[in-house]
Image 1 (cartoon, rainbow, N blue to C red):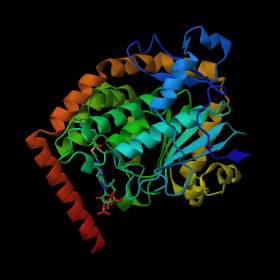
Image 2 (image 1 turned 120 degrees about the vertical axis):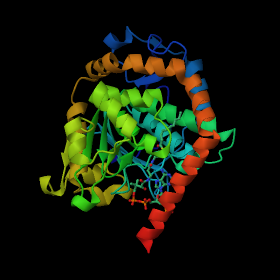
Image 3 (image 1 turned 30 degrees about the horizontal axis):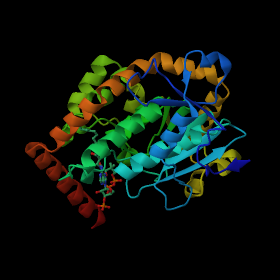
Image 4 (image 1 turned 90 degrees about the horizontal axis):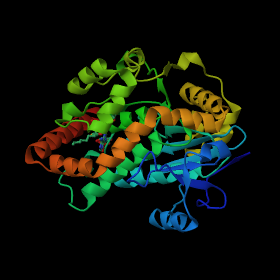
Length: 355
Ligand SMILES: CCCCCC/C=C\CC(=O)SCCNC(=O)CCNC(=O)[C@H](O)C(C)(C)COP(=O)(O)OP(=O)(O)OC[C@H]1O[C@@H](n2cnc3c(N)ncnc32)[C@H](O)[C@@H]1OP(=O)(O)O
């Protein structure tokens, strides 16, 4: 049976814990359908805390076709799909970031779900990274909120109790790459011929900006120090085979690998993604997600904390400074000029493509 996530988190259905040891100064939460052995390392929140959190982050529904994010769950396999749905390029606005975090929490609140596929309703773009228009002549009020929402997406994805699988159908530059690297497993489409290869990587330096430390470190942890150092400096965007060789992604799938339609995907995919039921990236992503879902969750979550808790703790401790640094850097006159030039180039390229 498949159902759409359509109810707010209910404190009777789930147990919410704060990982005090992981995030002493923060509101970092791991939603965990608890098993007694795991509870020894985490402390419960009171009903009052839960109510407060629910008030701070009202849960909205994202199941309709015009939503920024579309989700669906398949309880039989324990797998859910969360697809970004912000045409034309899934560029990350404040609202899209908030929608991703909220939907992920909704999915986590279903104890039958153990894995989530992070996908895109756009078959050629996973996410174009930050919405550059958020960065140009930003308002003093919105810019820190915007950055906070991105930090939150990172924390929510990287620290999720769910196994997270990125189905990278197409381009994933900059913050789009961050979304993928924050997952547990990455599958990228091999592209449709040499001329239309999708790419993934941190290209920030090409825009005259630098990836923030937590994002850069994510690349370091994924591909190793020296390759990451070089890729970050050059702003390298890796085509699929290079991304695989470097370890940026775990798997590359081409049309030839599989073209058979998958019955489970018909039930699992939200309406906006029904055309992707025979997409080989989606099929592989489902297989991988189902495989993770079979691992005893308390062991899987504990193993994730072994590798991720330190960086999440670091993020929580440096979060405010990071926001201040980001806002100061982005509003700098030289950076603004660089960003405007970049957007102008992007528009020219778009016009040339259309004519
Ligand atoms: C302390 C400082 C910290 C700094 C923090 C840095 C962290 C993250 C930085 C970022 O994420 S910045 C964003 C980086 N992203 C990019 O550079 C990608 C730019 N886009 C592209 O290269 C291409 O669009 C694409 C993703 C490769 C797709 O190419 P395609 O040819 O398929 O599509 P286009 O015609 O180029 O684009 C379609 C449509 O989308 C608009 N668009 C694309 N990307 C963005 C974006 N990032 N923000 C806003 N809008 C975007 C593009 O202008 C087109 O619009 P129309 O012309 O159709 O109106």
